Image (cartoon, rainbow, N blue to C red; front, top):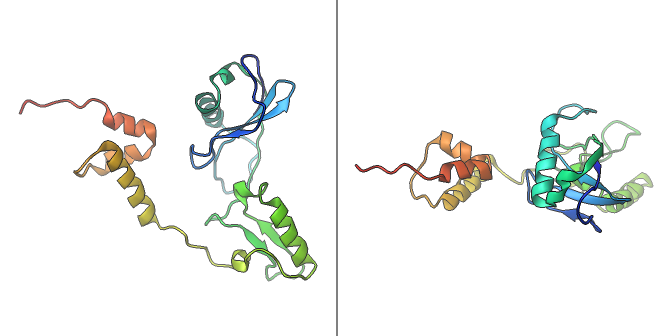
Length: 199
């Protein structure tokens, strides 16, 4: 969203908190004249969308105030922006010539497209001119999914972190464990004072 500051010192530089919610940490980009761009949200959908949801506004507002600046609560929201980022099933881009003659594909960069654009542009320019590309052909459009993680490893790591946080040496029920997977709030519910038994 684009919002105008009405309280507190404005940001002078771009600030990003990369450790929040699926890697889409809140960030702020000064726009001048007291305005700030606040982003962003993360919702995977099957088709491009030009709408957003109240929970996205809530998420963005909450974490911007918690992690960037409490005075954001006093901002005047001028515009709510909605855009789409292309993402592939395995999280890696598709870049290169597909079997269809005359078509070149460069998509699936998700959050890295902007930052990687100089490299992507040089690679695409080379390939369109018939020269050697500078990006590994592992991301060609006809590739198989790139496997860098497994569900077993993912859930094992998360469960271990929760057990370490809770300092438990015994198993807990799957429903309780799933609640803890919900993040800090879930862990807080579980670590709330426990009823002591006299037995």
